[in-house]
Image (tube, rainbow, N blue to C red; front, side, top):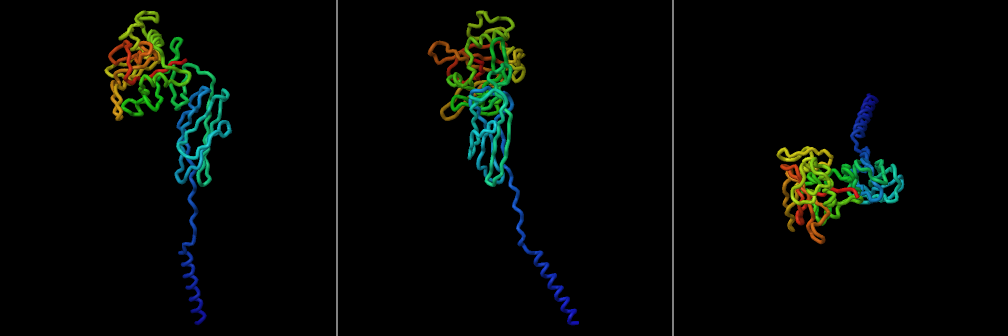
Length: 325
């Protein structure tokens, strides 16, 4: 009997010990998996050929959800060209001495736990620009459609390059700039074109209008007159959508004039006054009305008209349409 009691006593002790061990919290849970850094290349460097010469700005967004990005490196054809240790992660690539053809751009980001992320883009460089191709503005990565009209090569979109002073989006809304381009003071307009392009002269606008007009040719004296000129050049240059009161055009040349309006006042306290979105499209030329004068000749198209207004201005902000050098 004594042996039986001892057996049961030992069995109970064993069960109790097993229970205690099972409830023990000594087991160390595994460390959470480290997330790798995230790289987003904002500049569309692989969307179009890039002309060699300028410094290409490559804007990226690099972050780590569960740690810290310690560095981000830019490689061009496996050669390290730049290391950044803190945001903003904006790289610059000098293409002056690069060869024409395909190049591999690689960005490597590392975090504080030793994880790395690699992203690659294939970029095409060209030594010369072919009109009709999209143009890549190396300064900010904007891409513009272009069109050949006679002997001229024009951008088929308004310039949307942001300057420190003298440029605005209509109503100060970025989305308007993406559709209609920026509005520029005349001093800024004279200097804002990218390399290889310029603000068109009064005469270059005359040639364009004549090419679009079905009645008056380039040699017609009417193109030297101020105010409203031509027969239907405005109608044929305007875009086929976006104009108020059925004011759309035919856009037969692919020039695509959109009704981006203008800025009529910008005050020191930041108050701005915009007018005519959907109704008119005014542009600067590079030609002064008289040598040394602050007034520049302008062009403007209207929803309710088919011709083009040639006038002059000095204080408002208008759109810029660039022409190839």
